[in-house]
Amino acid sequence: MTEIWALSATALAAKIREGEISAGEAALAALARLNEVNPRLNAVVAHRPEEVLSQAAGVDAAIARGEDPGPLAGVPVTVKVNIDQAGFATTNGVRAQEHLIARSNSPVVDNLRRAGAVILGRTNTPAFSLRWFTSNLVHGATKNPRDARLTPGGSSGGAAAAVAAGIGHLAHGTDIAGSVRYPAYACGVHGLRPSFGRVAAHNATGPERAIGPQLTAVSGPIARTIADCAPGSRHSPRRMRATLGMFQHPWKGPPTRAAPSSACALGGSPSCRKSRPFCGKPPMICAMPAGWSRNAPISRTSMRPPSCKPGSGPVRVLRPGIR
Image (cartoon, rainbow, N blue to C red; front, top):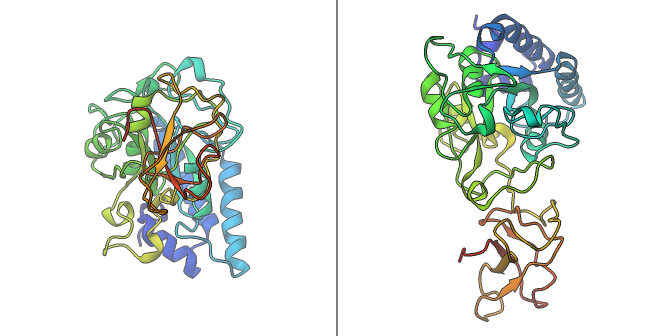
């Protein structure tokens, strides 16, 4: 019989929903696997077993009440140490952020929890998540579970190493120029870089990122099977269409993170324009006022900023120079 930790995320979620395995059993199996192999790999650099078991108990309680536990029902998932998770330090592999404790979750973490996932631990990354290997002065080096002499890749090397070693069934990673894809290749697993704007993500612990990272960075899944990594494909059950719980529509509703001023990272004011001519008039450019989020992806259709004319309909948030 396949051990619980070795099941795919799709298979495990199905077994938990059907009552063959409890979320608590899956969490205990994941923690046992972490304790067994992580000391040799250093893939997970922070975790709290009592919180993991508490999350799993919540999933089991929801199932007992007859509620839908979500597409990732009880599936242990790791998140990268460069995103906010309440109560944990968002170190990003940097000593200056070693004690930067998040007070709230990144949307990635919240969406994972809504999808029923159990957050197992936080995975290693190089300093500033800007290297093709995974080592830093805060957490040390991560080893490749296939061969310790080889790099696990970067910057999501901790995530890929964890999944390849059976520490969690899915992993969150971030990608600008290959930081999900290269570690997946190096560790012999699968990674997906979603289209820009597909996954909502920001960190309240840090200042707004420069325009370059805003336009290029995305969050995406790493998994042991393609079915777990390709939501909506014909190979995946419909309930897994929200793989990693991150694939929620980030453009629904108004932005939630307020900008401290109307000045953007490059100077000047962000701008917005209508996504399509609802009223039959040419697309209108309007200044984005102070207090309106400048963190929204370009593809995000949001509510109209107050400086747009009444009745002009939804607008598409744009950054300076983007048309």
